[in-house]
Length: 151
Image (tube, rainbow, N blue to C red; front, side, top):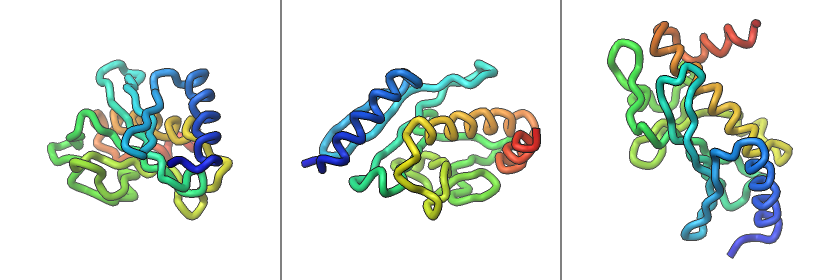
């Protein structure tokens, strides 16, 4: 059973998502709630399926953001992002279900209920754009994001 506050928050998040990021749909199965959808990068080379899993105590707990397709993300030079696990250089956390990459989007210590699913997906989309730049340049994602922040 969903907590009343959780249910109303998800309804609000879903309304915002429909307006701002309609490619991500809400799913509720087996007592678990998530948003999932496909995102094409600006270069147009690839599409990625992102899944935002919402914990039972959302929005008071940080949700988890995964790249579920393609499941294997290759690094410049041949290894995989999946093999690095938790990494500041790649802004990743421990792998998710089936070994998929989990994107680090907000520091859990700085997470609060004012942050939204749209905000998490924006960070996920930026991560995907940086990942595609990594494939071309070999720079790690942290370096790419740091360069973008300076602009």
